[in-house]
Length: 427
Image (cartoon, rainbow, N blue to C red; front, side):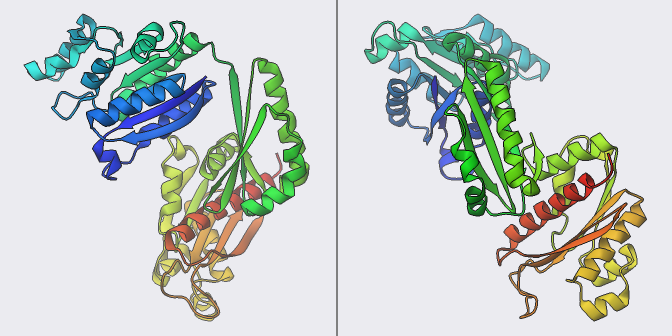
């Protein structure tokens, strides 16, 4: 089955709100074996909603809509959908009970305008939204066929959900995805992520081209480049689950002889997730020292729940005084080689490891720009280092003149170096 996503809201079009709903919905649908073929964002405009929904329903098996279900006058999705199906709005008892319960628990008065949240097109099936006041509306089969003058045996679905992200996500996780699977009898789909670092996307493509061309037709490979890394995603689709699983595993096994030196992890969305998994599994601890990344590395690590199991803390040592006083970087090192140097990076990593009593310490020091570069050390020059039980390793990076991209690439690079150093430890 193929799916179209329609996200409604003026705030999305003008950039006031980032449309996270589309990516969140896509991830859930693809994981459940459905193809997301089209994503469209439209205004809170009745003509735009009507024309878009009719066009999408004719082209795709399922159309999932978010937004425009609130109680105010600019929330017109429900009324527009009702007009498409020429269906009157009726008060739904289950939806009304949910609205009343939410208002009572919050000690709010249920006003007539809020009571209207429980009014839905008579021809829809109500999917109760237990975390919000706007019910989810489900239309299928003959209802859609009659409205669009399609054959009576047409199997199509339209689902209208609130645009509030946590409400949409609850409905997707608890109701919508399961209902779509049952209605369309979807096939299996499984995927595997492989994190690659230290080689550019085009060079990687050339390196693994023979392997990629040998993949069976039911296996798809996607290159997903990020700052300083590339994520390879293998996706298998079909009816025989055991065949899909064995095929993906064989593909991964045969990739390592070609690109194993660049692979830093599997089954993770990002390098910080690889680090988290590895450090938990091996019962290791980590501390970070940052200069040019300004705390971004620590932020990436602490954004994940449970990081306190392995991450002890960090020092953002932007000035040389802090490098000396808190990390123990030698004054003569800074004088002779400068803050952006191999020697300084090594001493930063060793210092934070010693002072925070961890198995590993990392360091980043560089010139993120746009100013501060010299002929010998241009903008984008970054030294990274990892100190561990078997010594300290440092690398020089030249990351270009985009400040944010330099920070992101330096962060991914030092974490990838950390993964490689951990993997060298005896099991």
